Length: 92
Image 1: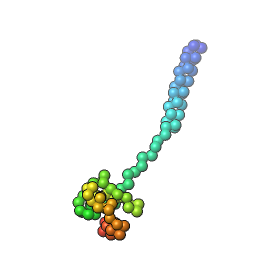
Image 2 (image 1 turned 30 degrees about the horizontal axis):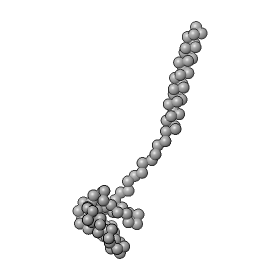
Image 3 (image 1 turned 135 degrees about the vertical axis):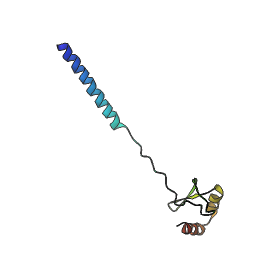
Image 4 (image 1 turned 60 degrees about the vertical axis):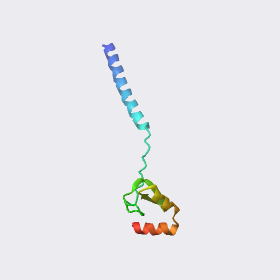
């Protein structure tokens, strides 16, 4: 009878220890937050009025602007601040 009790206690102890270990490992797991991709503010290119490619973008005063191609992106990069402001006004 003592042997059975000893075996049962050992089994119960192992089950409890396994449960505590599993809980502890879940609590210690570090989950890094996934940053949301900034959403582009336009669906058509400000120069060509064609659909934008979301991979070709520029940041302007906290806004992400998308372009249809590298050529239009290059035009934006070479534009003056006044020209960019005028384009932003058209997009709104």
